[in-house]
Length: 484
Image (cartoon, rainbow, N blue to C red; front, side):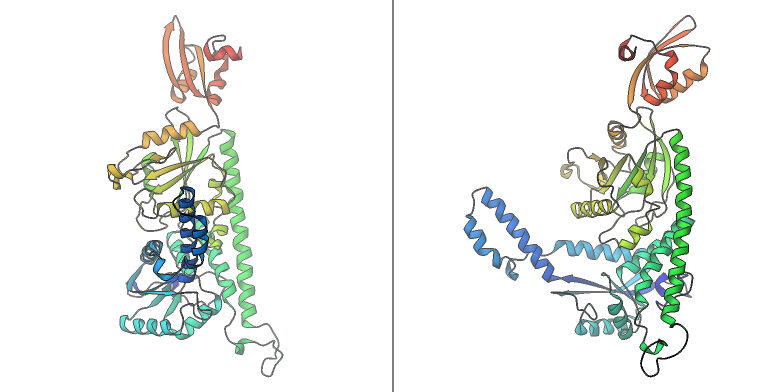
């Protein structure tokens, strides 16, 4: 795993992500926490909501509800937190995606996090014992650690300590292929490192006011912080150059307007498989999380013969680090510019609704929550026919088998308002072969017949194409009567 680099190494370049000399997977101990104090509050709120519904139905008296509200969080009334199991399974998949071999998984339930070590001293001793018995190389926490917690755990445990954000950054670094993607990962890594430089020991100081702390020059901490800040500024300049190139490319595309439709969704929802099924692009398909990091654009023709650009983007995840959202704005610009978002959801997932909420949360953070959205229930082939429930307005598809793809294309056609479909009647001389070919390629042509050297037909297609050949319109007939 790329987290092998010490957190105290802070040169002008990001971690180089070394691998084990033998090339074997690192053995990892996973630590997952469930804070029951928060769960009790949620459980109480859920019970009150259910009781309110019963009041509306007349099944229970309101005074009874209010009288029992204080006891709603008693242990005997709590239901098991099923979401924690889904979160744990997702964390284990994150570890595998980073190249780890899971040696053990430790679960702790406590009312609130320990300020010093997150898990408390008793559980810390248990983790030490598991590390000794399994020979683990790294401990992965399914939680973000504060700089002081990370320092305390690192001092106590005999192997490296990695939190959730650093683990996700490692996976992103593995999958970044383009220069843009690598820059975005580096920026996120540097911004993650910066607040964690402190606390390297008072002996490092040379500018303090006490005995043994006086001396010329800047501290090592200040040197490291300055180097990282300079590198962050440099990476941001390079990313801004990437954005300028993207803007220039977009301006060239907009000269011949082709609307963008972007795939968004939870990680491992099957976006790349669906992207390949629609465009035959040959993009990487993998069950590993965040297999797609660099954006891809491919042209796609709709049933109406209109052309769109379909964009495949990075997947989202619960508790997606804010540094990743900000660092990857260059990648997500296609989502911001898209006319329509295809929210791809894993129809077979047990956390379907929670995943939807997490995606909508990230879209709101990007200020693009108001765009038209088509919900796409992917992997429908994994759901028995008798259990399939498709909400109104959603489209059920399988990127693997191709089921429902025609319906998805038709739904995009209906939703697309840019370059609307119009109907026109044409009279084109057969000598105008280029015009005939363009109209037949870009529009649906019907009722075609010939009189002498003239071709008469009705065409339904994008306004930009049909209006380009307005000199051949037949005025005063059908839809053209309004324009005559």
